[in-house]
Length: 221
Image 1 (cartoon, rainbow, N blue to C red):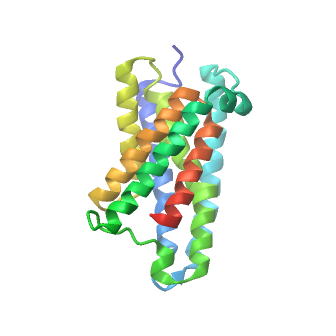
Image 2 (cartoon, rainbow, N blue to C red):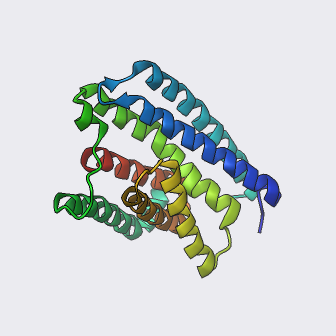
């Protein structure tokens, strides 16, 4: 089985991706407060997010060549794995809506969206753009693609389960969760995302489902 690099370099490189994703998420969160959108910080977020995403994309292409990954076509994935894709859509909806229901009933504290806290319509538009164009991409790369390429390529049950658990932990970390309830939410979502990526190995399908999840989250949770 091909490997990207030596174990030491691989771990160091993955820490680098974690820092990139964490800084991007931090800048996004810092762009908004109760008074509304901070345009200057939002601009820094956009520049850093775009540049770091480009670096990730360039590295992904290099690793596909190193690992000799077969060409995967989006249309073929959708037609051949449609059932799995619909299952993941349902699971994402259950997790997102289930958390909202528990919040409404008082079993979980509410996660207040920045838009509702500030009342600034620009915040909602910023959150949507940030989630769709930058955060979803980096979440896909760091919690799925690079994690799989570096650590969980063996096709065994143990590798699959450990990969799911680690994906959940990584997603919770780079989402900058501050409460255990948020950690559990993103941990569950990370494991759900792993189902589709491991079953399809299609980056584009996984990215679209994470975008769907983040847009849903920006609206309801």
